[in-house]
Image 1 (cartoon, one colour):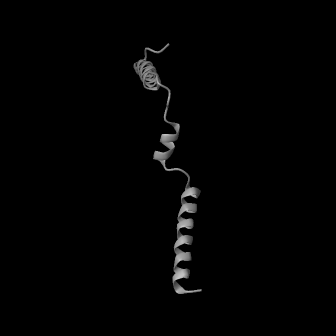
Image 2 (tube, one colour):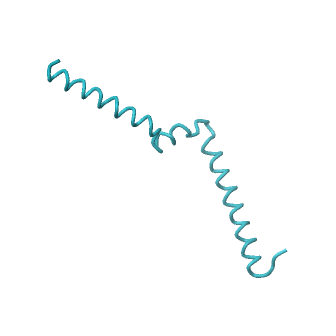
Image 3 (cartoon, rainbow, N blue to C red):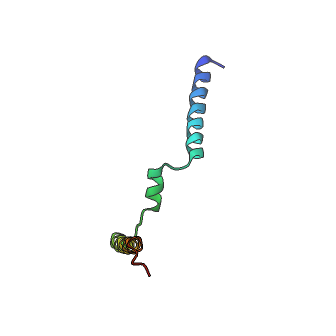
Length: 74
């Protein structure tokens, strides 16, 4: 086999090895985010509503925690 053919095979093997390494590591965080991104037309509205609900819950939890620290607990 000529030296050029060996070099071509080596390049092909390197490309396969690179691809296999990438597959072994799985998708990047950006690829994963794109896979799970919402596609529903109202997804943005639903996300805003969920965020608002979580902020309200967080505020209530903080108020309850501060009340207990002050001794005004249940």
